[in-house]
Amino acid sequence: MSRSRPYNFSAGPAAIPEEVLQEAAAEMLDWHGCGMSVMEMSHRGPQFESIIAQAEADLRELLRISDDYAVLFMQGGAIAENAIVPLNLSGGAKADYVVTGSWSQKSQLEARKYCDVHISASAHDEQGYGSIPDNAAWSIRPDAQYLHVCTNETIDGVEFHFVPDSHGVPLVADMSSHLLSRQIDVSRYACIYGGAQKNIGPAGLTLVIIRRDMLGHALPHCPSAFDYAVVAANHSMFNTPPTYAIYIAGLVLQWIKRQRFEGLSGLAAVEARNIAKAHLLYDALDASQLYETRVGRECRSRMNVPFHLRESALNAAFLQGAESAGLLQLKGHKSVGGMRASIYNAMPLEGVQALVDYLKDFEKHHG
Ligand SMILES: *Cc1c(COP(=O)(O)O)cnc(C)c1O
Image 1 (cartoon, protein in one colour):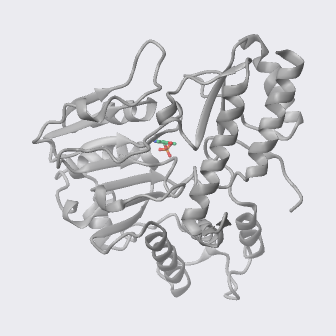
Image 2 (cartoon, helix red, strand yellow; image 1 turned 180 degrees about the vertical axis):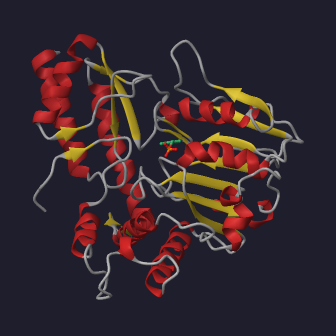
Image 3 (cartoon, helix red, strand yellow; image 1 turned 90 degrees about the vertical axis):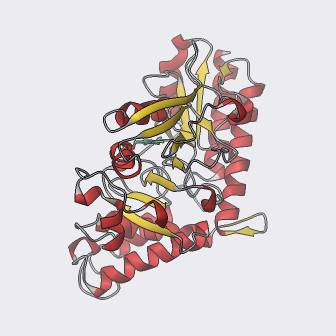
């Protein structure tokens, strides 16, 4: 396939598979002969009913989500979930948090408005974040209503490659930036949530996968639109859901199902390709004298790869050269500095290869 656009390394809103954008463009004015754009149809009409039902069925198939779990299509992103989770799950009592990066730090701060928060473990040190404290040493209160983790820290590039042992306390995970990038065992979690704009679709849609026994415990002042039980009982139609974002996410889910890589298919193929992409990039960074990564090897993210030039005076030239080479949005988050390459599902292996070629070329000229 020839390359019609630059490679986009944005952390989010992030690249969407080009095939999906083309499908959406082709259906923009008239979805399946009904004479309307998806944007223009009632969320309660038969057309949209079929779109959301298919999206839910595909999500359940890809992640093997059992009927013990409700799938909710919500709004407000993961930042709203930082409040929605304690409003629904804390009972105004105790909730424990593990802090492994900027996003879980934000989560625990917000939760303090609603419940008694305890930090079970924190990975923060003088260098910032770049590790996951030994799970065996986490101090988890046995009477905590849940234990919250962020399984991929988008800003800091720290990913859990294991399911934490929460000692029987319900496990809640912000998976915004790696949901659907790898196979997961949903049954190990009480609640999984994530904004769509990293790996799944456009901004505006939040996915929540929640075990049904966790429903129905919201605090009395929890807004109805944010009460998981209300949203579940109304099949995500208590208020108007983000219909167009759900439609695009549905196309992305179908795209994931079609993927093939090294004899694998669907999510297994996507995961294998993501592993190959991450190896390619980290190997190049490790081999260089100019670039460095600060995250421990055992928790390096496959999705978000922050790296620094040893001479920060070269940052501007690096970014300018990258843009000329068709490699967009490599600037790191302002709190971490340096560079960050986000290589979500929609980034092809060739895009990572193009970045690696550029890294080597730039080092040859400036190293
Ligand atoms: C992007 C992101 C968020 C914030 O998402 P919003 O849509 O801005 O609310 C929270 N957590 C993680 C892990 C993220 O990647």
